[in-house]
Each structure stands twice: as C-alpha cells, then as structure tokens.
Image (cartoon, rainbow, N blue to C red; front, side, top):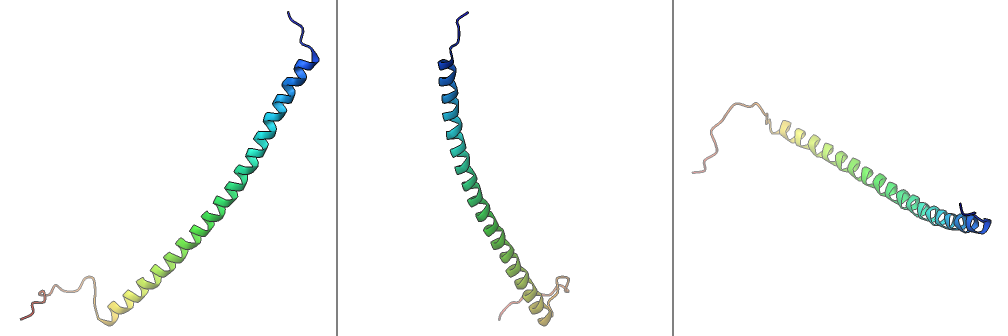
Length: 84
C-alpha cells in the first residue's frame, strides 16, 4: 500500500478549506437575499391588509346605500322597467 505523506493531506485539506470559504460566502449572500425577500413579503402582506380594509369600507357603504334605497336581496319580484 502506498504511503500517504503529510504534504498530500495538507493539499487536500487546503482544497477543502477553500471550498468551505466559498460556501460560507455564498451562504451569506443567500441569507441577505432571504432577508430582502422577507421584507418584500411583509410589505405585500401590508398591502393586502389595506386592500381588505378598503373593500370592507366599500361593502359597508354599499349596505348603507341599499338600506337608504330600501333594496333587499329577497325583495318581491317586480316587473322589469320598460320605458314607453
């Protein structure tokens, strides 16, 4: 069996260390991008919440208008309007 000298092991370890450094750098970039995505997600959630608020207000206004006009979903059937 061939003997493994220390310099060969040292070169392999140096190669492994270099690869780990690149992985560590890449992982830092991924974490940074993930933080950015998280910020965009929070902003999007806030926008959706605001849209729901506007929609609820519009729904309330529509109900108010219907009450004032005395419109009901289950109102008696009436003849369609036919202008003369």
